[in-house]
Image (cartoon, one colour):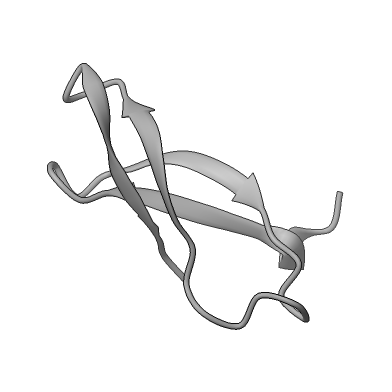
Length: 51
């Protein structure tokens, strides 16, 4: 898997990078936002893409 396709997903509640995902950067120009489970908050929260 290529490193340039990997993105970090940061929890909007605790501000920690808790998940990683893949993204096609040629098709999706805007930042990704998904609901994911945060191990620190112990609940599903919105996660935003980081650099």
